Image (cartoon, rainbow, N blue to C red):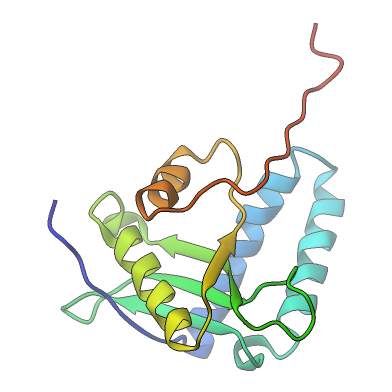
Length: 163
């Protein structure tokens, strides 16, 4: 596979709205497995308001569009401070969202976007990048493992009504 490279730039307002709509819809889809859809929508909306109180201009957060060598947008990424880090510790970052647009999937762009985000955070002095991934998202898990990510905790569940 060809090694891809991307350039990250701040999202435009329109890109931010589209990325937020996509991220929230995907989050609601996943959370709706665990709770009623209306509750999932409210929880996701509150999460966006909590983590991005100033939207695209929230301090410490990078909401970025990834462009390929031709300047075409191939996806987006949101990285920022680790929401679980101890107050005052700035060495840990968090990958809140990464999305590669459909025409560019399975072509190395996910790896390139993730590598560029890691480099950005390393340049800020962050030494660790954490993330959450849904357990059945095998493509994302493969991407993260391929970049050297390790499982640091695991939550499992089973319905007690399944025979």
